[in-house]
Length: 155
Ligand SMILES: [Zn+2]
Ligand SMILES: [Zn+2]
Image (tube, rainbow, N blue to C red; front, side, top):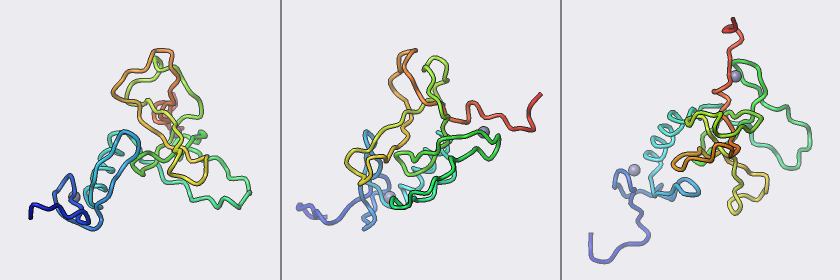
């Protein structure tokens, strides 16, 4: 390492390795420079903690106007909204918003638009509501997990 920083060499914030795969990861308030390996580990940990373990939705051809069936939960059969998270994992959310007071903290999500990263204005990502507590009446989107009842589990 010399006194002059080589701007073309990127060092991973996590493992300190210099790698060509190091780039900025995450969106909005979550940003760090990570290599592929560290990013995948981190994203998997976040997905595990958030319950963002839904199967990804297929990429839709914007020119294809055929109606796409809304996704359903494989466990209870209810309609769910499957959204990409800021760390490129997918989560099943309820189709309705609820006041924050009715949703336990681990299940609170919000949908946000990605203004500059996407060519399609409909690109919406799911963001976990954490850190600041929303007002009791603030609408949040509950994770589908909160209301999911397996059919075989009914009394
Ligand atoms: Zn790394
Ligand atoms: Zn379900």
